[in-house]
Amino acid sequence: IIFFFTRLIIFPFWIVNSVLFESWQIIGPYQAWWLLNGLLLVLQTLHIIWFYLIARIAVKAIFKGKVCLQHHCR
Image (cartoon, rainbow, N blue to C red; front, side, top):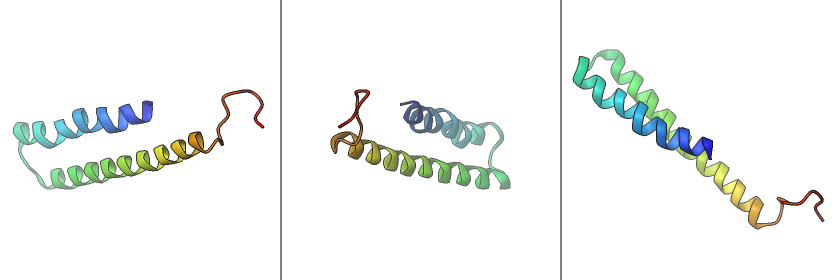
């Protein structure tokens, strides 16, 4: 839940949004601006892929019975 909240909600809506749009309005584009924003967008893409893989593994583990909620599994 923390991974989802920080990487898929806080990071894109606060960090990436302010770097992409607010910095453009405050200081305008500069050469490193393009590189920085490109890398931040690549990082956001990786967060989405990682979340998908983690969620897929978790769902498979829960629904196929590989995760036990009790102390002793059968």
